[in-house]
Amino acid sequence: MKRNEDKLNQRVMENSAETSPLLNDYKKDYFFQRFSQTVFGGPIVKTSRDASKTTLPYYLHLYQFIVFILPLVLSAVFTAITETQSGINYWMSIAFGCIMTVIMIIIQISRKYSAKKLNPSENFVDDGLGTEFEGCCSLRQVLNFVVNEKKWPPNVVFHSVIYGIANGVVFLYLLPSTSSRLAAFHSKTASISYFIISWITSCIGLYGLIAKPPSEPCQFKTTDQYEVLLLTRPFYMCTFAVVGILAMFYSSLHGIDFIMRVLFPCLPIFWTLGMLPPVECLFAWLGEQVLVHLFGGSPMANSQRLLLMLSLSCGSWLVVYPIETQAVSLGLGACFGFLLSTDVSTGLGRIIGCFSITSKKQDGNRSRPKTTASYSCSKIFYFLVVIIATALISSLTSIFVIDKNRESLLDIIGYIIISSLVIERIFGNCFTSYLLFGLIKNPLCVKLRGGKGKTIAMFIRKIFANCSKLLCLCHLYFVLCYDAAVASKSN
Image 1: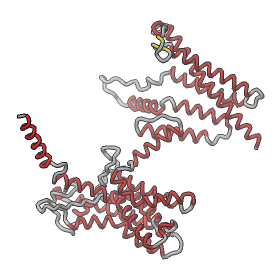
Image 2 (image 1 turned 135 degrees about the vertical axis):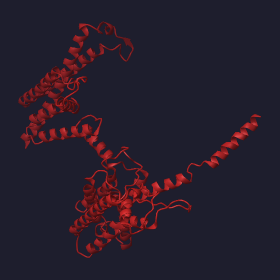
Image 3 (image 1 turned 135 degrees about the horizontal axis):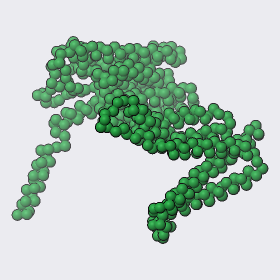
Image 4 (image 1 turned 180 degrees about the vertical axis):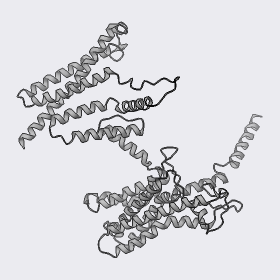
């Protein structure tokens, strides 16, 4: 009986595996439609072997192909004109970019006005199914299908400008006269083949700006209100092109330029596989790396705080950098570094929120939140004391920097720093349950849990902790100011 049941279950599993594949007919059509949009940059290719299923008319594919291939055709005309002249005509790339910008603005404005004249029954979803098209000459329906409406109205101008700039930069980058500098593109056949393949790559990357955006496999946010994701493909294209243009003037970039020219036609593969991060994710990561590793900050929780801390850090650097006096620049740098380490972004946000809340009338049942509780008078006084102490240390060290007993002073300060850190560590271990990596039980832990003993121990620990930081700053001032003074004397 058990064997028969096992055989029956095995047959049921085999039949279910045969009748329910991973991709049925409906899933296959949907998958290939979305996959083709990702590969080709946005055009909708809706075909089916089954005659009963709805497909798109042939003229819609033709209109999409015209919009897709437009940069390649116009660039070929402008390239032929440019190559007949001697040298590289930069004005031709500017003219080409301006023409592409005007074309995109005209298409977007035409789409906006044609959408207003459509009847509600003529509106359709993105793939165009369930809609009866009047014919190839019904430009209102064709524009409404081929060109996507911008979610944010200023993007009509902004994306048009980006579209023109990307076309102009890529046009200058893919000129045969610029690519023929490399040994691999000396022959005309190789140059023409590379030109066509690279411009097809550019058409794939730029189609989402002028028409429908592609379905990207790599997304940073679920909603894209300001349509920042559309700038990902043009950004990487312009990055490759800018490096190639700079290589015309700097010979040190020729090796990098050769590698990037080989990888440029492979960009559609990277976009399809999702190997390149979106623009907003990339810039957020780069900004965080600059804030952490260059300015010594901490990672931020959101983009607004990251932008605020980057702006404050760059502003403090711009204030300190022009100062020629070593002691003053170090003192200001230390003061700014201390202020930026006190979570300025949260404090400013709470203060702004406090003013915005108190300026409005509130209901009687609602209580005003304590927005500035984290910045009490005691903390503000502590900040002022530390800043004044930092300024005094910088001024005093600049006075005694050229001293015969400099080495002995540095040794004394070093020993004081070590002793203060040891004392701070001892008082910090008074509140732990175990000592020496958990081998010995701390007898003072129970006694110092409450009362005046804990308060006194915490006060002494904070004093030695702050003194050790100020002494480390003093030690650094002595070393740097002395080296600067010796260098100025030698010059």
